[in-house]
Length: 465
Ligand code: SF4
Ligand code: SF4
Image 1 (cartoon, rainbow, N blue to C red):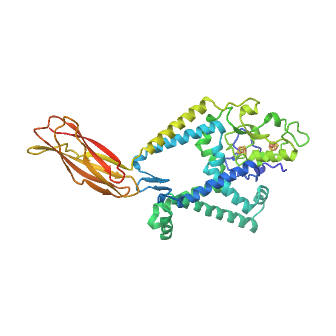
Image 2: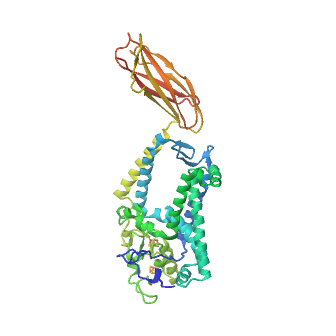
């Protein structure tokens, strides 16, 4: 049991951010390794999420990539469904549903998103810190080597770590690129060199530099300084939210082993393993990302002392205070309801999407044309094929409402084939005898998908002098 604080410079307190020194420089943290049941569970979640991220660009559904964002065509392919720019409004409801679900989960279980599923945590804790440990050893070895003068051993480990970080970053950014440029096109594009794909190349290099800076150096500062979710979480939790906390009643008064009246022997293990460098015994803090490292560390100490686990544990402030925890509170209902509204509107709208869109435009600046005996209206029917297969459409006038004057139609193409994710424009002429016309009246054109029988009716109005 070593009683060593990060960097040996000062103890974490509530007055300052421990990972930022008094002069504003970065106090680079060296969290200790930890083992325990929560650590194992997190590793399983990390492995599943990293595997999902790496594998999805290779997975196909209905002959298309399961997840593909086709930016030039403003189209997204998601698990067999195609979303075009006309469906962009759905993003609002998707984000609303996701955002309020996150709020509801946070009010119930604290920062489980940060600890288990945020990409920053998943890649930093699940990949980069692991590489660091493989190459530079455990916390004490790293601290010792950092203080020593430069030797060949120190040099090659530092260089190898940075090279490995860069390699992983390039894999991550090229995997991200594969969600926008299908993997079948990505490899030839990489071999062809940057000149042919300079936009994608610039994005990839720029993002690689940002990620390298983040995972190699910035690290926990992202959660503490930049992440907006970290800023608002204090407004989302209350005394009944499950958080990672320290049982002060049981632990205090703390003291060295054999002399402490409480169960905390002030060993510092919970502080040494903390990736944001805080002391959980100081109470709930904004820097805590709910990673549970301190839970596993303290449980290990309690087992060694022959005392019950859970001095640091998942519980609510009410629970730590000996009160009963209320699970269902007004804020849980409110966030849950808003999440349900967002998710329901998204699912309902997504399920009602059609495979094509038919709209009409009247000839600009030309509401009608007068012939000797007739009035002519010209419309342009736009048929947009939103599916990933070519489709044939029938365009035909709809029966007229009762009391309308007779209309003579001239449809330029009564049947038309439209390429996948493309649109076609079909001129449609309507004629009414001048003697029959009294006032504007509604007419409509019916567009039918010849394969599926899906119909869209385009409402128009016939105008005359
Ligand atoms: S809370 Fe547990 S791990 Fe932390 S100092 Fe006390 S005994 Fe050690
Ligand atoms: S206080 Fe505990 S749960 Fe919070 S970030 Fe530190 S180690 Fe993780």
